[in-house]
Image (cartoon, rainbow, N blue to C red; front, side):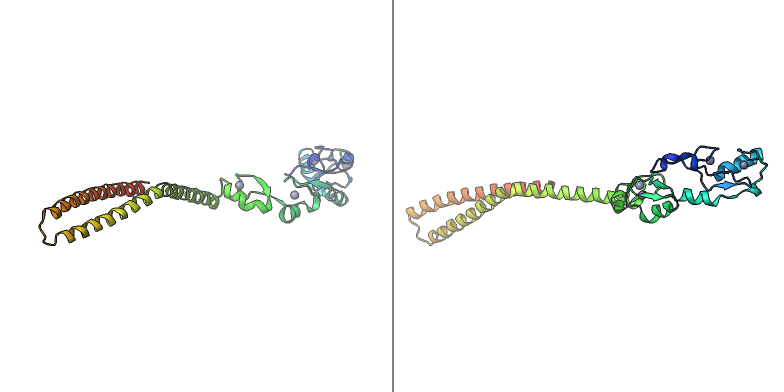
Length: 236
Ligand SMILES: [Zn+2]
Ligand SMILES: [Zn+2]
Ligand SMILES: [Zn+2]
Ligand SMILES: [Zn+2]
């Protein structure tokens, strides 16, 4: 059985005596009256009649069958302005309150009963994305976290590549230089190997061979360094 209205829900100070249910001191909800015209909230009067079989004011005998809607009082109470329990600033006629909640209130309550959060209607997507009772929102959150971690990983790799690429460029330049020098020496050697076996060319050949060896050593060192870079990149 629904009780009468708590006076605090109304947006104005009421002429309390006028609308007050004398049984519970609330504001009469669905006012009922007996033939004696004394009226009360429906739940309160039905309960009293069942228990005591009479009107609480004048003691006239009553049964549930004697009771009828107190129409004028219902209209008066229905016209009372009440506040919105969701906290919007609209003052609504009591009769229009259900419709306000359904269609006009800018605030809404999370559809997940266990949640109970109240937020602006336009912010529903935002709330769903963080509501712990919303499965779609939970999945979206997981996805977002995954994406974030992917982006983070990618950023780390990019940073690492950025950090090593100048060194890599230098290495590549040196490798190119080595190759160029080694090709040049080989060319000179070829010219010297034309059979003119005098002492001078033998000496020059020896010097060039030593140079070539040094260049090849440098090239192999650079190659090692390149390998190290590549492994480091793979590890990131
Ligand atoms: Zn009452
Ligand atoms: Zn009465
Ligand atoms: Zn509202
Ligand atoms: Zn929620």
